Length: 428
Ligand SMILES: Cc1cc2nc3c(=O)[nH]c(=O)nc-3n(C[C@H](O)[C@H](O)[C@H](O)COP(=O)(O)OP(=O)(O)OC[C@H]3O[C@@H](n4cnc5c(N)ncnc54)[C@H](O)[C@@H]3O)c2cc1C
Image (cartoon, rainbow, N blue to C red; front, top):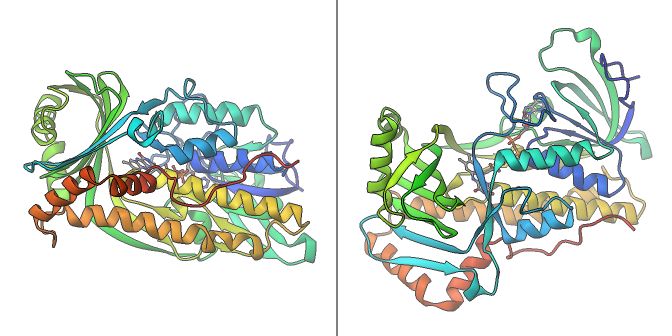
């Protein structure tokens, strides 16, 4: 049945077809394989090239960003045999320091005082991507690069219920080579603009923050000593995440107007402005890598599952990076789904049955609401026109620092330890 040119290994039937091989889609595919399911993972970009790739001007699988991975996410990635701190070039976060420009109150969280080796880790997306690629190459998962979904039709035939898909070249150079594939479960993990969701007519609620996130790696005079800084600067919230001794990953969220100004600065002037906003905790900002930027929007998918269909990752929820929780939340979504599908197998049920997929609403939904709420709360209270007066914010940071129970709760929420425990792992 399948006839995509040069892909003779393609099967006509898969248990699961995963659309989108970003950090979340690749992780989900590897987790599903551990359940013994047959999987096709497709992406419109090149999946296993050994480097970040760009096929179309707007498609880049792994960019120069870094991701702060929470303690809870490390547990999930370890259970899926993906976590290897050394291969991932993961830098441990030993402390978190939260402050506001022009105010004295600060909050400090230390891994040791909370009884952990590290509060989390910072991993460059490119090394994370490479690690996932080598796991995918060593797996039984079928990979289709430069490919997109052309059509998806749900069909009900009792135990055979699922989707009939047409997949074809992302460049649409030769539609003759399109292939037809059946699957029991279709997973949309193709990013915030999910074409798969569009094909199925599932919209998203989008809120534009009117901001851009500036990302760069910056070199500082003093070593960061594994400290992650969250600074509510006058221009907007900025995070400096430890990558190497004197290198931190900057994520700076600023208004569009401020972005235009910052973007017009050369590297030296940009570093001076950053130093002014960040303060002198790491000494002088001595240099920065190429700066990239992203529009900042909240995008929440209206439906997370249907018969034989589920949405994960940025396709389900794309968040403001202020709390660094988008990937961590997505990974918990993957874990919730894997646990439920394992249960389906145990009960000899159909993996596309909404009885099993509804966990994405029932279990993952409240987690999503909590994290979106936390991110929006941080943006709102530290905004220029905030309803919370600066003195109250200062008091908040001081109290958080001084009250151990409050500090522990805050750490639990941001370390990904607040919710459900997962029973991931291979089927026995
Ligand atoms: C500035 C910034 C900083 C961040 N920092 C953190 C952090 O510190 N911690 C954290 O937890 N999260 C962070 N996040 C969020 C995190 O980056 C995302 O949650 C995560 O990358 C989402 O991955 P994804 O695989 O779902 O989506 P994507 O990375 O968007 O991947 C989608 C994949 O689908 C493919 N695709 C797209 N369209 C199609 C199509 N039509 N057909 C086939 N394939 C397609 C793409 O090529 C891509 O490979 C940050 C986000 C930003 C913007």
